[in-house]
Image (cartoon, rainbow, N blue to C red; front, top):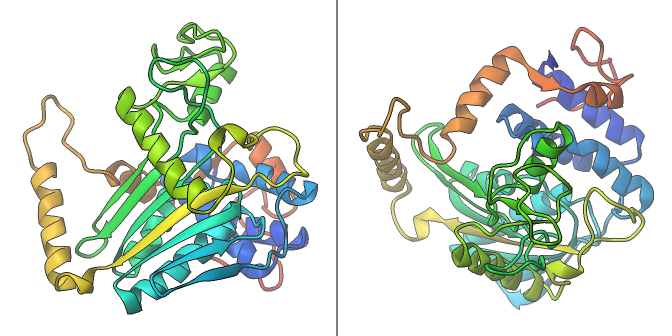
Length: 351
């Protein structure tokens, strides 16, 4: 795969989306989130997702010009109706609202209704961390995960994320699915004929997929504990926003693209200064992270904390560029030159 400068890819994506009718601010939000994921090595949630998001826009699953509506009488809690916006656009707007409310109330929680797939959950949690706050983010998704001991998928991969600021650029950045592995990773393995790790996924008859085959369902993370976490996220997301259960949701990668998916999220922002001096918190968090990083490893690989692997990849990719598959380059054709520079277009935002 050829590598392209992150700024050039970002500019090309914004130009493409603006030409498809997205408002500049929304196009920038989507490009920010997807380029961020690709920079951090999470290619399954990076630039490749733009093609599916464009299908959602073109088919009518997601609106180009949603009208957000925030309801509720409490200063620290509200329902954020995303009006079938692209999930990244909805997630960014909802977290900005949560951050602003937490500044005044000390903590704020928003249940987000009528959204779509929003990419990486930690992207929105890190928005809060960049503002000096703690961010907590949850999302439900279409049912792909069986209950512990069951064969019928009832939970989505239902991610959860937490981000907290340390000293300088340091911080705690957790993002995890509540399934044994991500759906996209299993699909990628099957597509390339690679073996799926035993016990991670089964077909519709409950047979292990470690020897290949068609994906039917994923296993919950840690057995009944992962099942419980997945159900907890359904409660926080689908029930508080009065949206469909995971088992009632359509799949991102499949038709119909003209029908809203009604994904729901739950966003929390915590103002650190409401509890402790922010400098003390940042210092102690970095001390905690260092305590783990400096602990004695079981083998040759140093102990790392959530967010470390992504930071390492990002440092490399900011120097060497983002690897793009042929289909991703083709999608950006006309907006990205072969040498990796963006085609000059008036008013294109750059990261």
